[in-house]
View 1 (tube, helix red, strand yellow):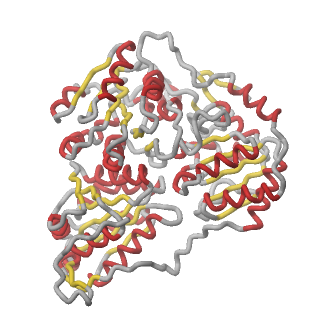
View 2 (view 1 turned 90 degrees about the horizontal axis):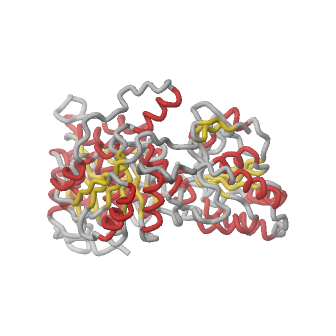
View 3 (view 1 turned 60 degrees about the horizontal axis):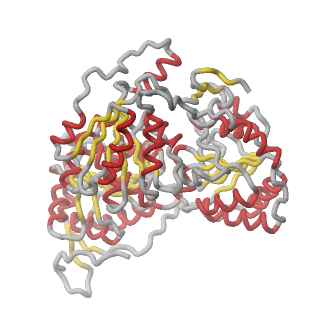
Length: 586
């Protein structure tokens, strides 16, 4: 429920619309949308908006140290809550610095509204100081964007922006506001509803296609559920769990969908794709009915598309975005609709058709044989600190509702493979764009949303340096996150690719001048520890968890020779996996 908006001292009778400046309208609109926090960085073009924020006390602004982190933190908040995150940046370098964060949210379908300032309209196109075409620059990486040219249209545009961001396939929407619009005044009437004639996302799914899908699943001997991030966006995890139990089918979740199905459930086969499990990938190739929900069949999941499509199988594809269906793999049964609603009707259709009696015993026997290869095993006897051991230890001792925010690299894959998430929105990471530096800002956004929950940022010595200045933001706004740096002295994933594909020529992947991370953390006012011994790992993690009021940076020096296995090389098929650097043939 929205709290009362601040009083900007109406300039007319209360029976008439209030006359507000454009800047005041923005604050009012955010409050009416339920927004209570904005991440941003000021500049000349947005100072009217910052002044409006300063003249009220309901909307909280959090000052980051770089605009990229503003969008990442708003993104982390959105991933953690499912609500629309909001970032505010100035013109020119402010908005160009924000583009990486916007693109990250776009690739992962995260609901954001980004407010950018621009120079006054009279100066647009004149190469004015800090002028840039924000609409043109961001067009390829937003769901939609607007350039506001009249203060009277501002309330309607903001309403549309939030509606577009949170409905259908979610995504970022940019609203570019020239300074003269922020300073102009007009009557403020915020719409209760919005109707965009050209935007009508289908939600229910086609009845005939749903019944067709039910028949295929009922008759399947080797069914398989392939779950993508759209299941989390649609809040459809419960429906996936119900369907898997109903037809006794194995389940795989993509990197973006970890937690959508309990990682400890016996039906869970792990993550598919480039660094997925052997059993998940073999099941993807050898099932006879594949149900894909909220997933994109992207290259990191299915490998070589021609190899994937060479195996005959019936494919059911459910997605809210019609452009995703058939984009890479042609399904037998395409269903456009909201995953939660469609799955509910699919379960109902299965019930009407008679619950399948086949327990798929032969299928499960084959899967158990694949599982017996223990593809995620590593050397537990080693005296060096194995990164997998750190992740598994954290999983064992962390609170059950802890949130894990990951940067991008080997540490990301180890966390995805070994943490075993039990619920949606426990795992926040950059999937589609693979953006280094997101881990700490994501953790800030998650901690701001859920201050009572433990929030861990799992990172590497390369990724953390992308946004390490945000340690200052953590201090200023009392965001006591726990940073776990798996320090191997390399850009680990780059080094691994060089190891596998470039004859071990490690060009520019060695970090030769790393800072003393714990000392740097202490310089920002936090707690920092170095961990170099395996027998120190659990104690250090427990000490970090016990510290409730301050950010803790654990610099854990892990085995630099360790790589992420299994692995599928680019352009190869799902059954062409490397495990411990040895090929496994189907």
